[in-house]
Length: 513
Image 1: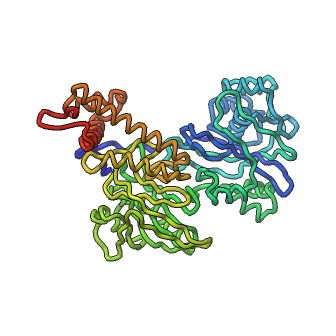
Image 2: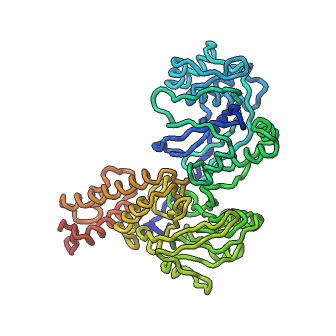
Image 3: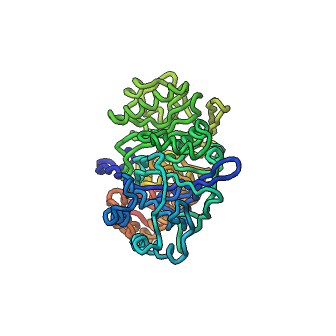
């Protein structure tokens, strides 16, 4: 946490515990092969915004209550609580339910409205016979756990539910929906669209889609593929693919809460040239995570071309001595970052306008270097077709500090505007989940910082002349902010206001120019 004010310590955050959940993979038969249903999540959602995903949700007390009060429902299933959650979510999100004869039907509007208004109504409607689970068949084909850097985590079971031909038509619920579009995909087309940077998928769904495509190739069709997966559902650790040619390894670090990990990115195709960005590891757990990934890289037939450090803060560099015992590669970084580490003849300075190409099985992948020094002098970002490796510019978990000692608030805001102007498809931040809606998130960051800038100026104009009183006035809308952090960020704003001539500072304190 190199960005904290001197002498300040913050307690580590606890990793969020995964909640049990269930998702439905509806399939339908079409000429030329089966299709599966995904929904596009609206960009305002706090979890997994602006990505394509399978409908589903967390297990609720209603679902557990159904299992406890009706032992006869789906009595042969050990996962019946998850299936009840699945059935309830299908009604809420898709307007679909079992027809009692082994198929599916579209539910009546009034029934759906009641379930959407109160989850408990689902159990009441089941008891009354308006809804049923008779004849319902589904297969659990895999399970995935949300990566530990996410604020909301789920241990999710994915169930395949065939709808046959012509299938059912999903619809949006009354009121607000998690989705703004439904679309049927052939699994191979889904992966092809993701690999072409046309759509975004949450990392667990990328490997799931790959598993489906591989199983279809082996078994002949989707139903046979799902049968095979259900016989031995993939579980445990999975590769986190954040974008085409961009994998993520989560390294536990002593970083700014509520974050608990630093995102170490592996760029390049499997079987080709790779670079490791921000290895970060400095304890046994982190070094083990990095070691496993490096071995996987070598097992794929890849080579490690370089280690790239986005900036010099300790939660991004790690223990380079111990890391060098895992793998060795030249370090590429800005001159400011290289000055902060032990020099090596193979080091290479990365500056604005530099670029590199990673050769792989399908060709070369180019990455361009841009400087974004507001958070830290010498911080760089990497710009590619998949998106921007954006370092510590923004995050979906917590906030980004601009230290008063070494940061530059003006450069930080202009850096955010520059990244936004690039119109990236995705941001790969230094901490937290991938950002699939960069324009919206960057705009929120920019507007928030500019508004705070104005509040600091207004605090000075109101007669506040010392940093504690300025910070207290400027952060009056954030009573939970740590006083030392508020004062440090206020000072960063004051320095920028001085630079542009709006504020002056002398022995009597700060005054408006």
